[in-house]
Length: 524
Ligand SMILES: *[C@@H]1O[C@H](CO)[C@@H](O)[C@H](O)[C@H]1NC(C)=O
Ligand SMILES: *[C@@H]1O[C@H](CO)[C@@H](O)[C@H](O)[C@H]1NC(C)=O
Ligand SMILES: *[C@@H]1O[C@H](CO)[C@@H](O)[C@H](O)[C@H]1NC(C)=O
Ligand SMILES: *[C@@H]1O[C@H](CO)[C@@H](O)[C@H](O)[C@H]1NC(C)=O
Ligand SMILES: *[C@@H]1O[C@H](CO)[C@@H](O)[C@H](O)[C@H]1NC(C)=O
Image (tube, rainbow, N blue to C red; front, side):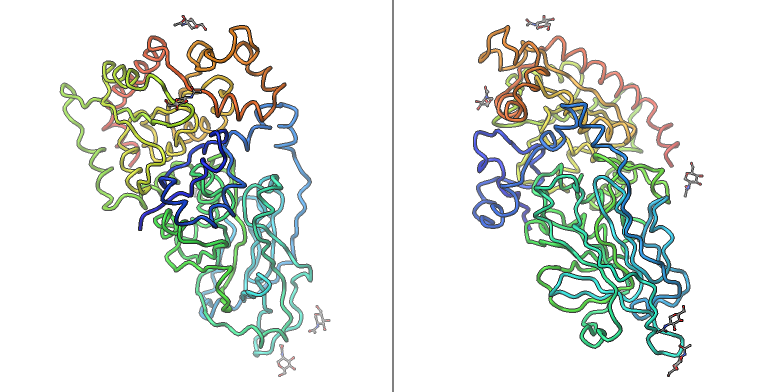
């Protein structure tokens, strides 16, 4: 099925809020025709850039304290009943289902029966429910039925708190606007007399993960940062033995991310808002973990996962035969006929265009790279994008040009070179530097000077917009950033200065390919 990205750019006009990483999907024209209502309802209102979303953090240091603030955790920790939950029919192995994989979580040690919410994170709430879990579609609830006493009578003494827990399963808890569009999912203990009204229509032998296809998922950065990386963090330890129960499930989402969905779960997806049957599970997780912008914190996962593990997950789902990357690793040419390193150059249209892109590509060739021009938002399926990007030793793009695909690059080998137009450097770095280094790759940022910006054609040399972008941003706020620095700026790179950066990355790539076999041996 063709994957199509809803057209988020056009409807916003003036390209002011041009999709940061809007790709993986496709041409706006087709998508708009196919999903007009959907697009308008879920995306147009809400599409922002990584820049927009994190702007407060980078623009005003005062805010960042609060942003990272140590909030008092409001833990909705319910009592943890003991005893083997009725595990969806056949869960009597005795080894309790471990739902929460996070180190130090108040829910990490919950027993076989109970509800536990971890609301201590600034970005996300996540609730866990272990035991006889059944859906109630009418109220979008997950009900926890009491465990059965040894002689078969229901014990009315469930130790689960009476309190109903409510979660919006999305990772931007701090952003009211988008959260208002995420449905509330309820979790509560059921009374034993409710059992008759909630007989299982479908029994699952794996727990549910409740997540959403809504929010900012129409933007590739957000799809990975807000949804899929968090989902992976939350359930990778279950090794696909989890049922995805998805809010706002829709054909666009299913068609754009099929590999990720089946990589996370071996079961069919449940369309949570439309499926009125009673589904029964041995447990449920509502909401996902979040470790930071495109981050995985190994210290917080029980099994020491890293962003490299997430890359490996992507590699496993996007590589058809599992052979191609292996091939690249092992068929090292003799040193004297060394392969030219490959540089992928993302080409943006409309705004933040590299006006001398052809010259930049020739420069990269002359430095010694084989150059691939990569297009953003060209409608190609993510699997083919994976193949193209993972073949690159260096990925180059202006901020907003699909750089989330750095996740597709080869860990430990590749480099990301982000071009930051005037006024954009802090945001650019904030979005991608950490992820790049977490993948043990080289991060380079090329900050354009005033004389490389198209803004010199519009503003006088002594205008604060050119002279002191940080000051201009403080005065002009988000509107100025969106309209001028992001939406109204192209760049024309200084070939001498940019050439220095390229030469540095080229020698690094050569050095690494010379030691490739050693490196490979180490990674095995
Ligand atoms: C077993 O069931 C009987 C009623 O059938 C009840 O009186 C008794 O308390 C139950 N025993 C336990 C251990 O729950
Ligand atoms: C619940 O447990 C308490 C002691 O823990 C006991 O006194 C009480 O009778 C129990 N109630 C029921 C309904 O089983
Ligand atoms: C994770 O890392 C810690 C500390 O480095 C180590 O003690 C532990 O054995 C590791 N666990 C796994 C599963 O690798
Ligand atoms: C652009 O400005 C930088 C200093 O910001 C200067 O070093 C460079 O020579 C200038 N380039 C051109 C083409 O004027
Ligand atoms: C940037 O380049 C694109 C494509 O060449 C052009 O359509 C657009 O008008 C340019 N923007 C500015 C601000 O010069």
